[in-house]
Length: 299
Image (cartoon, rainbow, N blue to C red):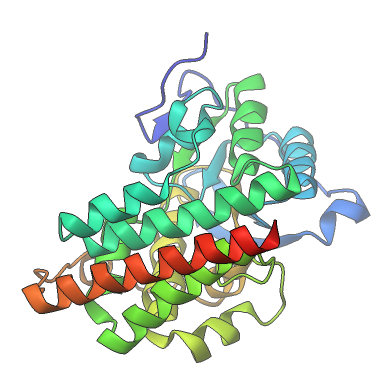
């Protein structure tokens, strides 16, 4: 039986120190190579960009880690999302319900409502494609366990990301995000504003549609993970970092740069008027009716 995963530093009983290895050509083009000085001399970092709803990404991750057997496997996860590594965890197998979003709204936890709704969209899209979202992290974890490599969860805490996102968004963009997510849920469109979207211009599209969200959801996390990855690399000889494709360019751009992590962790106190709460709940109720109407008409 697999253990529940709560510690961000896992499988620390052994380490492997391979010399720098050249990947096969078909895998080499899927990796961005970074380097830095470390306690072991020079650390080679292999940055792998994935799509979070893709069987091919799972296969790529397995082959790259299995071939390199790095000291550390760095994942775009935080402690709160460590359950994603356990395929039997009910939070992985259960699709969030729309009522979960409504409960979060009634509790005035708007950022949690949005994250639940986005998760629901991803899960529904994953069902349509026959893939569990973020399963490439499970593949990476399994490969690391085979040779007792260390696994590091290197993303910023999800709750901080969503709280910072929500606090910086205007009322108009919050409303737009709600309706966009709901429309995607109703139509099951494969056109996504999630970081897993397999489009070359994803960051530019998100920045145009939701500029404050692009700042906190992508660029700030690029900075955070670049800093964390650099700190990890300074203590070992080789690292494979598995992150969404939308983060690869930002991490590479900020590699080895001084980054003020403390400023990326600050969260402003949430403020929300009762009128805004009522308006939002009514809007959700109206859209929910519209969704059921659309689904009913499809039948």
